[in-house]
Image 1 (cartoon, rainbow, N blue to C red):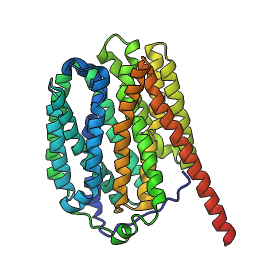
Image 2: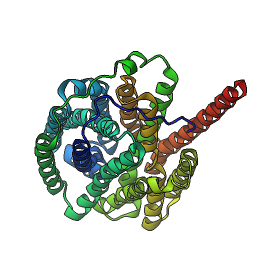
Image 3: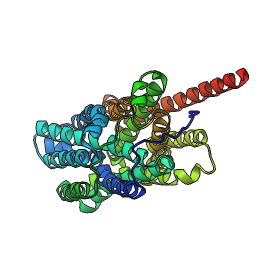
Length: 399
């Protein structure tokens, strides 16, 4: 992206043993968090019958999840500094458990409240865990963040596969609730009660330069919005090629599998390619995958398109996150705004995708939204790269 990567050494750096313990715990927690974050995607085909609503209205649950998550995200860094990792994550996961349990209802209003409840829990936990792991690993930040978010993808992939294997949402919900209960116990036993200290220098300069905040906010908005639009509607769009809703969930699984291999392989790929080269190739792969998925004429072709799209999108978030925390620091209050825009993208783009498919009378048109989002993000990255290159050249000429 043409952004200078810097290393911010935190003054409250924990011991190596504590850093390793919290990083491992965070990776484990991110597995179940990944399942819940993407839960609506594989169960979306079941919800119209369960709740007595249209598919378009069922898609509005994405908005309630991520709108609630956005509000919580804006306060996550402050709450983390006040409560500490253990208390915040434990409380957040309790909210997630209550919300998931509440979604097993036949009432639309209760379902919206339940989704908003676990959205708040996710809004607190995901930024807090990402920032904590980034702070704990300042030297290997990009690689560790890729590993952490690979664990999140393992959960995202497991969700639709479990729905396919178990056949009914009730069995799936039971398994998720057991996993959340174990995660709560683990966070309380192995989590750290220490509270990260605010970096006064970072806080004082939080908004002295708005350009990085604006750029990273837009990029996270688009990247996460595209990610959730694809994962949220893949099963519904693929229904035309499969005989049942549970089988169509394989499209969501294909997306997340490609997503996982991209994210897992990013540290190795970056040994051969620069950040900019990897981003450009990722955008091309993602755009190509969306087009293949839209043009698919059978199930295998649809799965290939979803897999390609997932492989292209997979590396975007950790690369952007690593650059963002490297440039802005992990104690910068403006990070909450960037994470907030990420959740805002997840809240707005999936319902917009569903509305687009409904307006044109074909669910395939829902893919227009992630396609435009990818093109916009690619253009922004390119413009940012050219701007940074020109600035560096000007600075060099003045020396």
